[in-house]
Image (cartoon, rainbow, N blue to C red; front, side):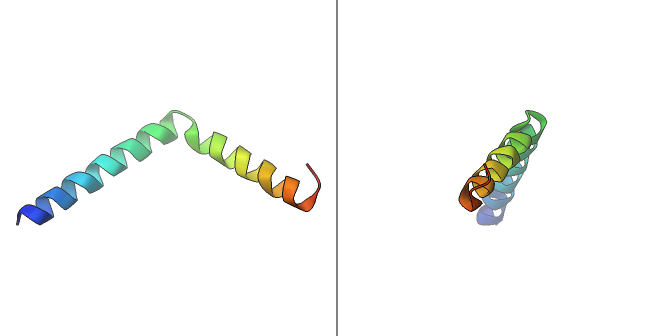
Length: 45
């Protein structure tokens, strides 16, 4: 029973932090950096 409570709390905390990162613009920055890395690999960027 205690393990399930701890797991649920950790999943909830992870969801809160992911949501905070998305609202802070972290997803946009990560996507932009990923696109630039891919373009550099092919020699375009």
